[in-house]
Image (tube, rainbow, N blue to C red; front, side, top):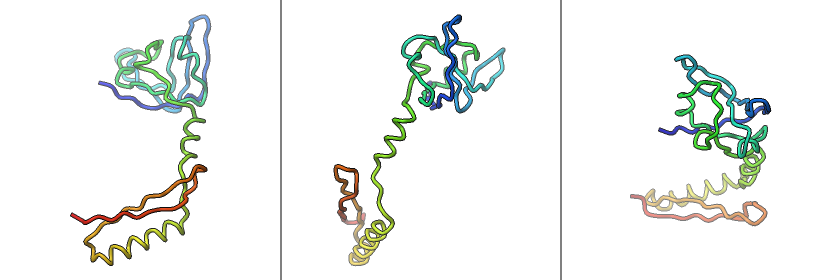
Length: 149
């Protein structure tokens, strides 16, 4: 079974004699040490590509169904267990690309939909769609109606 969970890299330490990278994480990963389930805020990876390209602030996806089968000292070298999900900059940038709508615009659309529902005697349902321009601003909206089931 595969259960991917996301972790943020909070620090990175390269240990040359052992050819490993220690990634400190924002939350704990499950391992099995001496027959006991243990939680640790780090994961070891081999010091080679792609792991050597991961940086502080990047997010990792870790298959926690697999890590629980290894001790905390395991040096992971398989992207089927540990892989990069994205960087904090990419995630912030994605969330900044979401257009926003003002409270007044929201109230106006809501009132129009309420009026249309009243006019139809509750027989129709309505959906509003936002129109977004090239600079990511709401440039208008449309309301679509259909018969209720």
